[in-house]
Each structure stands twice: as C-alpha cells, then as structure tokens.
Image 1 (cartoon, rainbow, N blue to C red):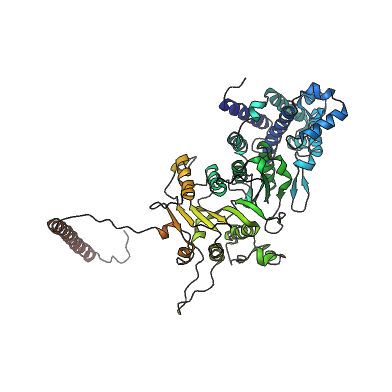
Image 2: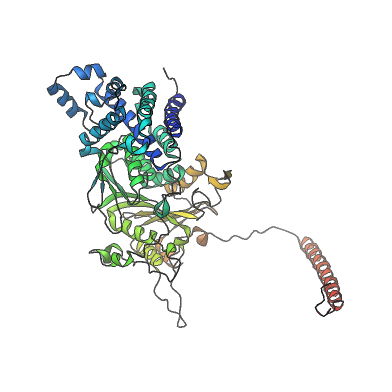
Length: 549
C-alpha cells in the first residue's frame, strides 16, 4: 500500500515514463504521435480506474450485471466518470491479448469508448466538428511497422495493469494533479509548435492571478473563460480557487493539441462537466462563446502575423463594439510583430458581464505605450490602440490594478510581462505593483529564469488585499491620479522621490566641502595631464605614404 503523496506521485510518474520508454523502444521517441500515445493511454488508464472507483464494483461484478441494472448504474455515474461497458475495461482487454489482431482490437475498444462518451467528452471545433476522446486508430496510425503493433499493444497493456489508481489517488488535490499533468506533458508543450505554440504560464503567475481575482468570493456557480486557453494552466488554477463544483469552464484555442491536453486537464481535475465547452478554433474570427462571463483569465499570444485575415476582423458583425479601440494595421515589414494581444484584450473586455473580472498577461510595454503626441499647439493627437484601451478602463473605473512581473518569469519568452487586472464592479482605488525586483535568478539548461518564492507570491497578493502602499513596491491611486499621468499604469511613475537628509554642524559641512574640492582638483589635474599626453602622441604620428611594411 502506498503511504505518502510523494509515493503516489512517483508511482504515477513512473507509469508515464514506462509508456514513453515503450514508445522509444518502438521508434516513436520524439515523434509527433508519441504525445498522443502517452496522454491517451494514460487517460484510458485513468478513466478505467475512475469508473471502477465511482461504481465501487470490480470487472467480474460488472460483467455479471443484467442490462437494465447496468444502464441504471451508468445513469447514476453521471459526469463523475466516463461511461464504460464491461468490454471496455482493462481486464477484458487482457483476456484478448493473444488474438492475432490484438492491436486492432485495442484500437476498437478505445474507439468505442470515444463514441459511447461523445456527448460529454468531445471537444468541438469552431464549425462544430467533434474531436473525440481517442483517435480512431491510435495504435495503427502511430506504429508504422504492422509486425510490431501487437507486441507494442501488449507492452502498453502490461504497464497499465501493473498500477492501480485507487481512492487514495482520487482523493488527491489540485496541486497533485497539476504537478502530474505538467510532468506528463513537459516534452510536448514547448515553444516548438510553430507560430501558434503555447507560451506556458508558470504556476506561480497563475496562482497570483487566481488569488487576486477571486479573493474571498464564495458565491455559487461562476462562469470562467479563457479565449486562448492552451492546455489550461490558468483555468485550472482559478477553478481550484473557486471550487470545481461551483464553476463552469469555457475555452477556445486555435491549437488542436492544446485543446486535447486541456480536455485531459479537465478530466484529471474533476471538471469533466465542462468538456463540452472546449472549442478548437480562431477566437478572434469565430468566437463560439457569446455569453458574458463572470471571470476571464488569459495569456494570449503577444505578437503574430494575422495579416491574411486582418481585414476580415473589421467586417465582423460586432466588430465596432467588440474591437472598440481598433484593429492593428498591417506594417510594411515584420508582420510577425503584429500585436495580436490587443485584439484578445478587447475581446476579453467585451466578453465580461456587468460585474465581470479578468486577469490578462500583457507585455509590460502595454502599461505605458501608445501615448498621444502633443502638437505645437499643445494639443494631443489620437492615441494608439493600447492607450485607448487603458483610457477606457480608467474612465469607466474598470481597472483593478497591474502587477509588473520580474524579467524571465516565462521560460519561453524574454519579453517582460505584466498582469492586467480588470474589475467592472471596482468601486475602490487602483493598485499598481512593481514586482520586478522580486524572485531568484537561476540558470536552467542554459536559460536564465526567475522563480518567485511563496513569500514573493504572498507579498504581491497582500498588496491587493490590504491596499496599503509600500515604498518602491506598490502604490494605491485614485482614477484621477492616473489620468494626470496620461493613463500610465507603471507603478514606478507614481513612486515618491525621497531625498535623504543628514544632520551636521557648520564645521562638518566645511570639512566635507573642502574634501570634495580637493577630490575635484585632483581629477582636473589628472585630466590636464592626460590631455597633454594625448596631444603629444598625436604630434608624433606621421603619414607613411600607404606603405604598410
């Protein structure tokens, strides 16, 4: 019997490593199909054992149940686990492993589970195509050598049967499953997926966003949305803070891989009831979620070439209200630097309900950028899109605050980032935090990264809960004070400049002045000597007629 959380974690991680080892042995190491085998086989194991745990029955008992009783049992399971037939279970597969077409049989079982659970466990595209739980021919399409498929399938099955996920595993908390999920996908969620690769949000940033946003709100049934969800780090943190039984998750992301990983994340964290709300598709052009949300969290892509469909954004039916500050123009060059995050940010503000709250990761340049230029008559021109967004938030008193994070807090980008906090019901003041000096710098595999300690996290969170200013760290402002600074949201621009004074007698003052004069006199003398030496050296230089010999 496993005795500690660390042992639970190690047991489950070992299963992941064993599946990866089987993939590597069969030539799939580093292949695109490897992550599908690892994540989907782990998911099958999890769903198998979760079904047995929820029903509190074993394979033999389930196999012997009359059809009417079994159907009643499935109705009682609800969304607490995937619905499984006896022939879907691992023990049944084990009894078939000597079949000559075992790999096909394994695929058929996974395919049948996906079809049987399509109503709850399918992800949808923006044109409403279903992406089912398991690939239709997962093993057959992954292992090219037909002669290896049966042995590959038996090896995977053997590893799945060696481990039992029991009530001790299912009783674990969000921290356990978030760590496990991160371990499982660590090799498959890096900045190598092309221009739509996800920039993974560190847990420390996700936790700070959730804590500040939710606070001590204990009210029921909240809607939580991320329009660029990735694999769901931000959504899982805020759902854990609210309570998984008191919120419904909504998401959209253009990446099919990220959407599939998000589904796995929801299943691990008791949020299966929200899987139907996962959408894979272009949020800006084809937003599937039109309802206004209670909470929105997001780490959108900062820069991306969307020039091919930029003009289409302006022709959308609700473009004028949804993108109230404008759509970035197409530059003459460097289209990859188009600030797509400004579209996401406007979409987020538009998607909040009348009391909605949001926390969005933005490049730190956003907090001061796009200030209108003053002409010769002293009048300001039209501001940039970023300026107009800040102005709207301040003028409508929707701004809760900003946290400027330390550099290198994100492993995959060197861009300095800030967290913009929006609260449409904010009746208080605005908190601006400069956390740039917090954290410990470490070198991870040749890349410098900043890690925040739990004390650092709490210091940032406390700045919003106590609303007490702290020298060179945080300020608490009225909205009018921000207007006088051209809507700048940089904390440093509001810090008090303090001049240190020290008491001294007249004699002490005169002695200090004499010492300073002597030091300057010495510097001036050295400067004159140096000038003389330089001039002398120049006078000794002669033209040699171009002869370099």
